[in-house]
Image (tube, rainbow, N blue to C red; front, top):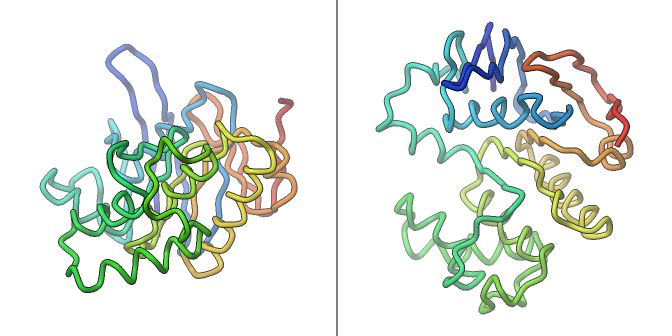
Length: 228
């Protein structure tokens, strides 16, 4: 699914955010990415969806070398990747339904298929009853569920989540995690950067710990491993 071979990422300001990373993530895995702030977690996951390119080394996504991928081909790559952000990134003037449908419209899905797929996905995240509401009328947890629905409505092979519970209260965070668990159960690979120690230690999955741009720990059913 995802393979990084001796990957380095150096920014113009001299920061090395990836320092010789080697990792392989298989289809269907659920992986937590943990580590202190500034460790390189965000760069690690941004390189997976070609938001950032490695300075050197190789990154393969389903056999495609992302470093050599033409910019014009990146939108096609991202059709198989859903991304969930900490700050939701919803379009404020669109309703819940329209925000999710937009993800299908941009890939030119046939209109006759859009309504069913949107409603089925909103049912999964328990938001069918709020289709006509705007993001400002929703709680933070509801906005994050819309964000998740938008990221999975086109049935991606991979969902990448960058601190998806970072702005949410504990109860809401568990609700969001249950959705990610369900997505993973259906066969989607999930890669999640998180600082949530309780979630990592309770819902056991593979843990990749990054410090100083290096993978310092890679454990199946691992613990968070840091004091918070």
